[in-house]
Image (cartoon, rainbow, N blue to C red; front, side, top):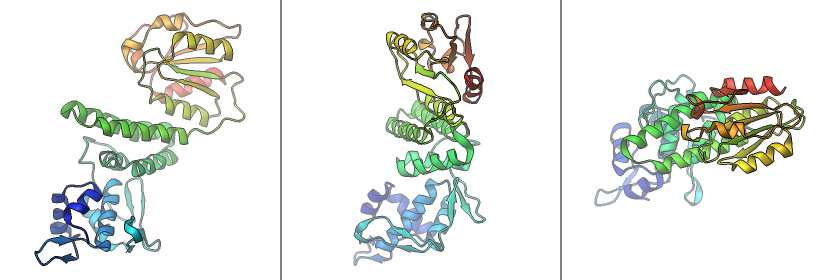
Length: 315
């Protein structure tokens, strides 16, 4: 039997939240001590875990409580998480309950107009629940594709996390955890290209001094899905290393990413070695939007259009 404080620590919520769930939804302790102190048993904790899981998937508090109270649970031995009865467990996909529910949520992050899945992902990120975030990201990629998941789910949450940090100065740890979850999801979504459609590879690298490279991963993943062989060289690639890579691989295209305008140096593009075979040059990322690019370099915009342009150029 655990106290309110112990259960709150276990779930990562405030004790006041547990009292509210008890008073408003009946998800309270089944026993009290002689001094009227709340004590939560294994079944109580199992239902609270179900409620929290539903909240992380984008449900409203009322719908999450109804789910927790009506789902058959078996408290796990040894203090682990509850196991679910597969016969009565509703399917939770895309932040929605099935069947017939209309959950709402997303109060933790400013996500006006975002999808249920994005709101559920925002809840998972704020709770620093990397497991729930990974599951939502994988669902989004499976249903909407890499670029659809990036534009419809990842970008809204990234923007909301950044806005929260700008307004409060807090949440750096949330941002780092989320970026790691996104990076891992994009790597999982990148298939090996065993029979590439392009005879020579695409080099994808960040500009020197550019460390903000997360969007490069969905770009590389979507190209791989389309059968395009990509050699991704990562963040802040030194210019001499970039020159060496171009000489060694004789690529069909070189894509240089700049997130920040100060990193979008056109001299780097002009300095690239010119192998015998034709090389298409692309400047990609928001850092290039208002900058100057040399003649013969194509400026790329949103990821979906960038993938199409690169595919046409090399296949």
